[in-house]
Image (tube, rainbow, N blue to C red):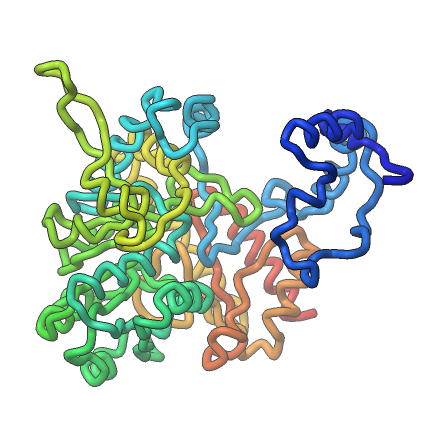
Length: 465
């Protein structure tokens, strides 16, 4: 303990205080607290840590200095999406989710439930209306987990162990699903049409079998195009005794039919487009929705909130539905899956966003995004050597820009765009090598005509450089 100094922020690090606390519990040293840990895995030397700051002010300045190195979307134009999107966040969303009873509450338990159960019930109801389903869970950690959980639900319902997924999906999402489903559930990729990006139905029919638990596809797809064969894909799944599981971007549902109207049994998606800031890649949250049928409801691993009678006749409250089916119930080892802390705060935020927008607002949002993204495709196609959209057909929000004929690599173009204060699209050359030098661009309601025109001029200069 020679040269020991107390920690400036932790009062009980003072040596005298430690001795008094150890004496109270019958120990002589801090090391005795960890006596059960094998000696061979204990760290023998000190950790090489920088000296602690002696004041809160110094610490704050240090952290702010680090954060100032970030290049953000406030001072740069952003056309990067690929799972984390720049949408406008109404001030009301931040106002409500920063309230103490929501921001600091944990899991919605009775000791901190000041409307949290009801807020989550309202969120579930609003998302259910948006996707045209009956039951929606409290949020998962992100959309990838929601998709993985959805196909595991399908596997338990069908008692099968294979899931067909599109090759034209986010590779990181595929790896998350693969990891989450291993080792008892196998994901099999289905090819896509190189002209329009649509799921290859011939390849799908070859790969579907009596082992298929579900066919998972996304609409809009990761590459932005709208999947036009949704009903046929669902029919193929149902004819094989499998379920149709569809991943959806909720910001598209003001203008696109919800997957329930083309055969989806389970719907999953990201909540981030619904009033949630990007937060340096954070702000992620996912949802799952099904019909109100026992075979689906009882396979949800996460919490569901419903209206329930109270001990006072004629009075109703909000509480858990079929709580024992979750890993939070009394028999955790019998839970469908283990579910840890979820992103309830983002569910409440999404609920506020949907209540604020309403059906008309969601329609205007979708319409605006489609108009602006189509304008961007048209303008980019005017650049010599650039194809504004690699795939034929209609896109929503995102689209693949083909730079192969420019002789420039996407990596180089993006570097030059950064110098001009623009975040270019996601480089697809690694995850989709068959597309060559292509990038996934994203246009939302926040982009003006001037923003898009500025991008076009900047790319023209980059490909000539």
